[in-house]
Image (cartoon, rainbow, N blue to C red):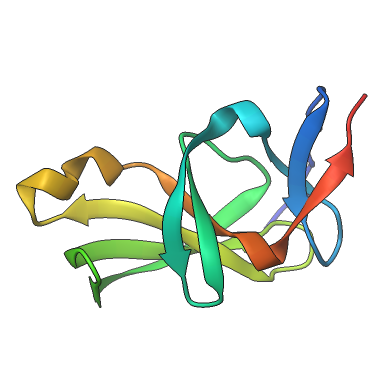
Length: 112
């Protein structure tokens, strides 16, 4: 594997890794705050940066069966949430290609 270059975001409200403060997304990328993860509240994002994905796996969640990949911080490798690949319930398909980040694993990084 080569060198990993981190990207940096600019704005007033930047969410990053609680462990190492690596930037993930701006507050504007939040689609919904009405989600729950393994550790409590979680946010649904349209896009995140500075992460890598794990293996795809099927998980039974509150809203049905989904194929997901854990997402890891590119800097410290902490699992910070997951990416929805497939939602088997038609009403849940809006989640496909979206990201969940666990609130307790996030930190508001000072914006530029």
